[in-house]
Length: 505
Image (cartoon, rainbow, N blue to C red):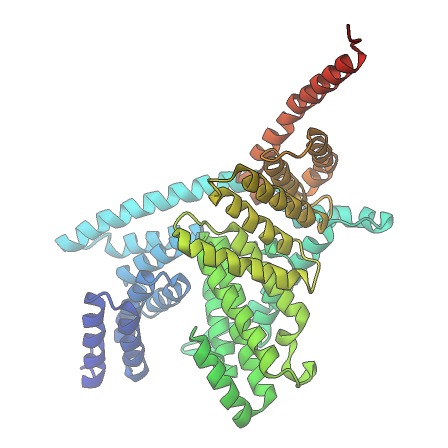
């Protein structure tokens, strides 16, 4: 290995020091500076692996995948980098890639006599067995699922003929838009350190998930690597922001507008915001990180609203699509949906109060500007949590549950009757109404609505991923209450009739 540039060596050592002190963000910065000055390909793989370790510690798994896989391209026998890639793919739920990387890591150490590496080899083999087991389980689960867009494609001719409102339309066109984006992504070509790709690819992909995030099903095992390079390419060309410091982005944007004009600024803001949207959806779908999803979508919504206010006197054509109301509503839709699904168990009660107030405010904004199911859904969550926290006043508790149920009905009414969430929201309505003084007859009417729409919903969404995750357990439980509630109505009616027919002595 050629002699190392003293400045590069200094930066690497500083990075190592920061890493030992658990200052992973600072360590990554030092390694980035070292990479910029380094000219030795083999040394580059080592620096990339060091930076990948930082990304893993900071749970920035897409970046870890990029650095670790780049290191393996530079040095195909680099076992540590293959192992890092395997770890990152595991955290992203990319099971096939996880297995492939652990196989490579094992192969790199298979014939080594070094005792330390033999211990490492044993650990790698354990990780490989675990990865293969997870892939086998996932494959069996996947075989039981039918993709809604495939079913929708078969239903559309009849739906078009009958002019029926259906969830099939949205998922079909969202998935088709996603496929167009993936075709554009496949034009990406890497030649050494040079990347050639189509501008607008991230825009196409983000438009698909904004239409319906359930379309995000990708079979290409190389997708994450390609997408990371695509974003890097578009961000480099347009000078988009890698930083998540919103104040800095706002400050820079105002300066760049003066220097570069609207065409360059809107391209930079577009790739920044759209890459956040994709990152949010990928974090959620690949590794279930709903808190991370909320963060990135919240960043996107904040920059959009700031831009709308700051440049309110500028025409939409000049500012670009990201500042249109319809685009903001789509982002808010995803944001509120993510807020609804996020796990609150780890939040302290004082954090919850602020979070739900912000959630309610965001929902109010969306409700006042567009009919989106997720906005009343967010309000239902707000009132449901308020009810759960109400321990002293049972009347107030019931009132809050009733308001939550009311917004669940509003959320359902925004959706086609064959949408799986239409049924789910009505199920939640019933569970909340059971905690109130609402009449049994009202609850039975809702159960009947569930039964009426269930068959149409099952046609499209019967084997969806949500269904495979246990959606129908709660539905079946609520339907099981019907006979119990009907018996109660019958007893009450019989008692009333007996009382009415009784003659006083």
